[in-house]
Amino acid sequence: MPNSDLAGFMRHLEMHETVRTLAVIWFGEGPTDAALASNTIVPAEPQVMDAVPADRLASLLRELQASGKPQVFISADLFTDQAEPTLLALPLPGENGPAGAMLLSYNQATTGEFLGDVVKSGILIVLAMCFIAMLLAGLFVWIRFRDRLEASQTIQFLAHHDALTGLPNRTVFSTKLNEALRISQSKATDIAVMLVDVDKFKEVNDTHGHAVGDLFLQVIADRLTATFGSHLVARLSGDEFAVLLANGDTQDEVTRYAAAMIAATRTPTQIDGRELPISLSIGVAQARDASWRASRLLHCADLALYRAKHSGRGTFIWYTADMDADAKRRKALEMDLRKALKQDQFRLLYQPQFSLRDRSLTGYETLLRWEHPEKGTISPTVFIPIAEDAGLIEEIGSWVLLRACQEAAAWHEDHLTISVNVSPAQFRPGKTEQRVSEALEASGLAPQRLEIEITESLLISDTDAVVSTLGTIREMGVSVAMDDFGTGYSSLSYLSRFPFDTIKIDRSFVATLGKNPTTDAIVASIVGLGRSLDVTITAEGVENADQVALLRAAGCDKVQGFLFGRPMTLPADGSPAFADPAPSLRTSQTSQS
Image (cartoon, rainbow, N blue to C red; front, side, top):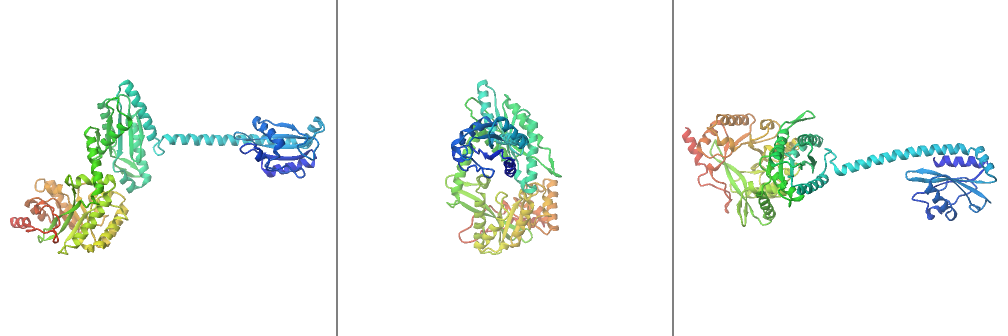
């Protein structure tokens, strides 16, 4: 009952001279002496009070709070202006018992007179109102209790399950895995763990947005649970799932499960009118004896997953003992890699590019090598994946770009261009164009002499941002090349959307020129497309004069490869140079004529 209604009711009772004083107190945390003594009932004007004198009433109110039942108290000296006042205390309901009390003080002549006064003054109506109020308060308390119970159940569920997919989370998986290991060790049964990673999930998120990415993960979760049935499937992190096979499945049975999962994801999914391909990499490990613990089993499955992701993706691989040695080797290289930049262990090599029209040297492609103090020269195919996993690729890429610009700016031939590869792992819209600008400014290299090479895999991620970044780079005067053209995705569709100056034909096509009619037709088509788009065509991996002749006949603009010289370091006295820059070009032209 609101305080204003209580005050009005008290004034009504005062008019009948039956109730001398009326008050409402709230217990709060309980009727402590300090809280109860904070206010005093004033008999002259009925009002709602927060508390009453504590020295004579506190114990009575505690009794009321404990019992929750209406009580009548008689105290001769409770109020100084009354001889024999009687106090009627009505509990006001709360969530955990009475939340307070309604106090009615009146003159007592006889019990009958008191009851008659009660009826005459309308107290029964008020008591009925209080009863209704108590029912409503009880309903309110029940609703709040229900809401709290539902909230508690939700919190409990989210503490053990993934909110997006509804699958058990890492905590539940770890608990179940430990339990399964104890059971398997006592019963000598097999137990296996699969770690499942969604290939290129970041590209799905970047290209189509996080809402589509969330739906994509839900589809994968549904397919996992459908494939593995009663086995525990959990979501460990963003795009990583885990499966616990604790029913004594043999290695062959686990292999069939993994193969079935790979097969189940070969069917694309439709989300918001988009057809999205699904690819999973799976690492599998099986506890071999009673000494295996959960941490070791998960670690081994993770090593197998790493091997699967770096073996072409879309596959599953079992853990083998050699993976431990490989992991230790990678970890050691990672530690050394962190020192390499500080200790100036990287160096640049340059591979020449020649024009097929006039046989002139047009520029160089920059290649990176790591001169390890103990292991010697390490190829980028070995250390670049480690750098990407360790988060070092951007720092290394920035060093390569700046050093290449600095060295090219010092060359005597100021018309030669320099090409620098930027991998998808180091390409960051907003940052890449800034790094290019800073490298040009710091080195003094003319923008027209720099070419940035990107691969096709970059083009399926965050299309608008990539287009904007490439456009900004071209506005600086820097040219942009698509490297390894034709090796993946929908190469032709990208040419109409991305601003390229050069298309580089992948070495896999060049290697089979003249041996495979299909390859010849593909190369001819790429060259023809480049001409129609006014794009320079460069062929990579040229190794013999026959390939040069075929490429010239097809209309290719530039060539590079071992036929014209191995990648070389920068001489101390200036730019790279070759004693005879293009003898093979002259030979092929002579033989063709």
